[in-house]
Image 1 (spheres, rainbow, N blue to C red):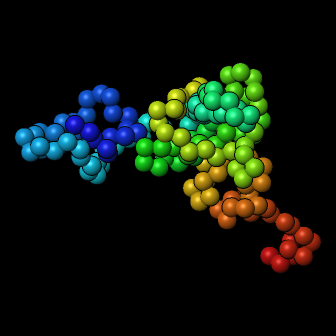
Image 2 (tube, rainbow, N blue to C red; image 1 turned 60 degrees about the vertical axis):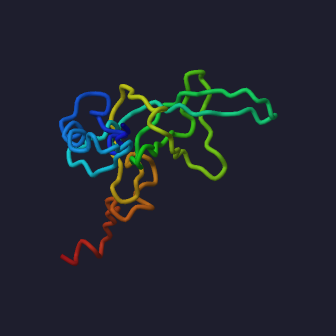
Image 3 (cartoon, one colour; image 1 turned 90 degrees about the horizontal axis):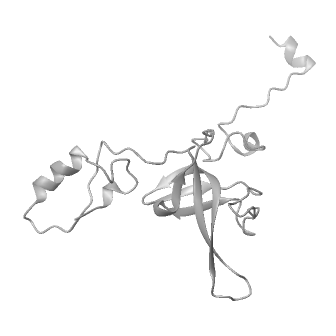
Length: 160
């Protein structure tokens, strides 16, 4: 039986009390796939987690060979059974090749959970409004929730 709600959950491969209760309720009904709202679901990858992302690439010359690269990334958002991750431009993969985003991209990639694995690194803070990493330069310019730059002038000091 397929449980779509369990995709991306920490308990997906292990024992889950909620899943076992649902399984007992629908046993014998002929149900092959089930989707329900689980209030105990815990994501395996949370925003800000440091991960490795496997990307699949092709040679531009038209060669049919496929190469797989493993890049260090940060989880930005979970979207169903996929993750939106950010790979910093210039980050090196396992073959020491620098990451270059496509012409229209800025380093954000959408990958299935099967191609993501945890890595040991510092957890990043992801802005809740704009879904970008806060430590990157320029965040305060395009995010309305970023702390405003304080500008003190001579006149402002005398207004209080």
